[in-house]
Amino acid sequence: MLLLVVARFICILQCSLLAVAMLNPIDFLALQSIRKALHDMPGSNYFSSWDFTSDPCNFAGVYCNGDKVIALNLGDPRAGSPGLIGRLDPAIGKLSDLAEFTVVPGRIIGTLPHTMSQLKNLRFLAISRNFISGEIPASLGQLQGLQTLDLSFNQLAGSIPWSIGALPALSNVILCHNRLSGSVPSFTSHALTRLDLKHNDLSGSLSPTSLPPSLQYLSLSWNRLDGSMDGLLTRLHRLNYLDLSMNRFTGSIPGSLFSFPISSLQLQRNSFTGPVHPVDQVSIPTVDLSFNRLSGQISPLFSTVKNLYLNNNRFIGQVPASFVDRLLAATIQILYLQHNFLTGIEINPTAEIPLSSSLCLQYNCMVPPVQTPCPLKAGRQKTRPTSQCTEWRG
Image (cartoon, rainbow, N blue to C red; front, side):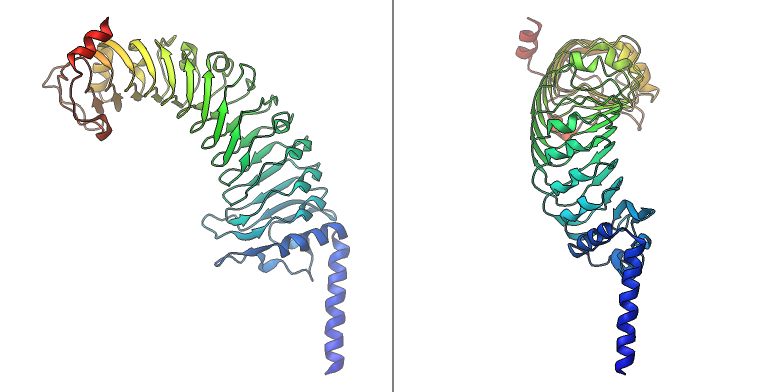
């Protein structure tokens, strides 16, 4: 019996040594430390294959090139998987050839290890939908080859390090849904196509050269950013998505913006002012300019927009006839014009608005010729007080 126990011990020891021989010893020890700091949440069995008596290059989520770990994907990537719990061990910085590091959504807490700045070959870093706190280490700016940085849906605080903005190879920066504050750094990478900073507490203004013309997706909504965006937006002619809503931006909206290949334009709830003059017929499916301080007459060039929100501004005059034609043809699905100073719309009171379309005209300087359901937040008043309309006309 004793001989059997000794033989089994020798076998385990030999298997462990064999695993070490297959993988660089430093990487082997780093994986052990990472494993000790993390655990499967109930219902997850991600770590079931992490048996250090076998070759770690066969572990779930571990990818090797020769005797070095080049990719580490922690957690089961399948949708709905419970994820991991624990902390990220500083030993991650020992995986010197690591090019990709991801963590699936879970309940990982603690800070980002500063040792990650040692991963000089890192190209892809994605640790989203966990409970990572503290600040983004400025030392991540040493990762000169980093292309994707996704730290979204965590509890990160403090400012976005300027060293991050200076990374030359960045193509995707996703830091949304955190508690980041301070100003938006200048991003210098001419490969940057996606910048998502929404749902933070960022403030200050953006300089006309703070974002590269390569951007295709820009979301800064739900922050406290201010200043004019005119000079910046005219440079970003490759945008296909723009969301600046829920900020404090001021100044005019450049007419050229409406000619960009944008699928959704979200500028609502800011302090944009002045008239809005698209340079051509607008082909953007959804345009939301609501809750600003825009004025002047509504351009007929907006009549080709499928979902148009111009409510809660200071628009005056008649609603262009082209809007009525497209509304009755069900080409326009949403046309919200409430809470302006509009004086009329040429539509037959007996006209039937298609069931697929929504029109709201209330609280303008006219009696709505057709009665249509409006959002509850539009209130109950159908028409503005005459005194307001007289005063606004001057």
